[in-house]
Amino acid sequence: MVSLRENSAADTPSGLDTIGIPHVLRWGFVGLLLFMIGDGVESGFLTPYLVSRGLSIDGAAAISSFYGAMAALAGWLSGSLSDVWGPRRVIKVGLLLWLFFQTLFLTLGLRHASYPAILTTYGLRGLGYPLFAFGFLVWITVAAPKQRLASAMGWFWFAFTGGLPTLGSQVARLSIPRIGQYGTLWLATLLALAGGVVLLIGVREPQGASRLVSENEKPFRALLHSVTLAWRKPKTGIACIVRVINTAPEFGFFIILPAFFQDRIGLTQAQFLTLLSAIFLSNIVWNLLFGLIGDRMGWRQTVAICGGLGCTVTTLALYYVPLATGSYGLSIVVGMLYGATLAGYVPLSALAPMLAPENRGEALSLLSLGAGGAMLVGPGLVRIFYHTVGIGGLMWIFAGLYLLSSLMAWTLTIPDERTVEI
Image (cartoon, rainbow, N blue to C red; front, side, top):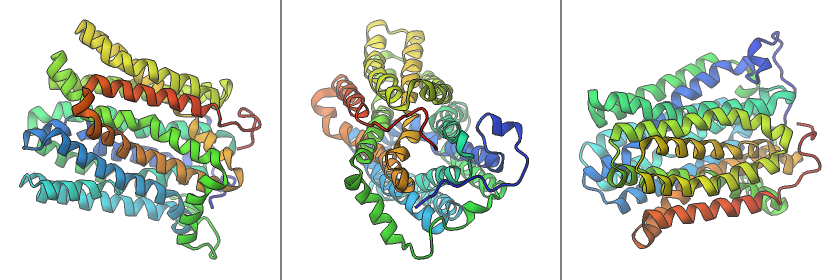
C-alpha cells in the first residue's frame, strides 16, 4: 500500500513548507478549497429547498442517506484506488463523476421535481467528492516531508472545511437573493469545476501521477486488504468508528438545524447561513490549532478530551442555549464552540496510520470509509428517530455518540504519540 517516502521534489523549500504546505502541492490546496466551496454551497439550504419542492423531511433524509452510502463507498475506494491507479487519476475520476451527476441532478431531478431522479442522481453524485478530496489526501501522504506530515494534514482539513460548508454557505447567502436557489446550485457546479482545473493543472508532483504499489498488487486485493485490516489490526477499526462519529452529527445537523433555527428560534435564512459559516470558520481555524495542540498534548488525548468530550457538551449547548435565550449572538457563540471542539478530532488523521505502521495506506482507506460513512449515519439517524424523539431527542443521541467516541478514542494507544516516526 502507500509508503510514506521522502519528498521527491528537488526544488528548494519555500516559505509555505515551513508552515506545513508542501510547495509542490500548493495549488492542490487552492483547488481543493474551490472544489469544496462548490460542494458545500448547498449545505445550508438544500433540505428546505427540497421540502419546498414537495418532498418530506423523511424523503430529504433518505436522499442524504443514499448520498452518504455512496460517499462511504467512495471514501473506502479512494485510498486503495490511489495505490493502484495513482492519486491524480483518482482525483480526475472523482471530478468527472461529481460534474456528471450534478448536471443530471439539476436537469433531470430538480427541474422536474422528480423524487426518483433526485434520489438517484444526487445520491450517485456522492461518489465524486471523496475520490477527489481523499485522493488528494493520499497524495499529501506521499509528497509531504515526513517531519511536516501532521501540519500538512491540518492544512488539508483547513481547505476541506473552509469550503464545506464555511465559504460555501456564504456563497449561498450572497447568491440566493440574486439568482435564486436553483441558479446558486449551477454556480456551485462552476466553482467545483474551477477547483478541479486548478488542482489538476497546478500540481505536477510526479509521484501522484503513478501507481504507489508494485505492479503485482491488484485492485481487488488492495480493496480486500483495506477491509480485513480492521480485523487484523482492530484498533484501526475503532479509529474508523470514531471517524464516523466525528462528523455524523454534523451531517444530521444539515437536515434538522435549518428548521430548528428558522422555525423555532426565528432566524432568517441569511442569519442561519451566517451562523453555519461561523461554526465552520471556527472549525477551520481550530483545525490548524489542534494539529499543534495534538503534537504537544498527545493525539489520542486530544481526540478523546477536546474532540469527544468537547463535542458532547457543545452539541447540547447548540440546542439548549438558543432555545432558552432566543439570542442570535449566543447562538453564534455556542455554534463556534461546537466548531472548535469538532476540530479536536483532527489528530485522528495522524494517529490512524500509526496504529498499523506497515499498512498506512490501508489505514487511511479505513479512515476515509469512516468519513464517508458519517454522511450515511447522520441523515440515517434523523430518518429513524425524527418523528419519535424530535430535534431535542436527536441532539441527545448525537451527544451520546460523541461521548462514546471519547471512550473509544482512549483505546487507540501507540508506543509514543508524540515521538513516533512519521
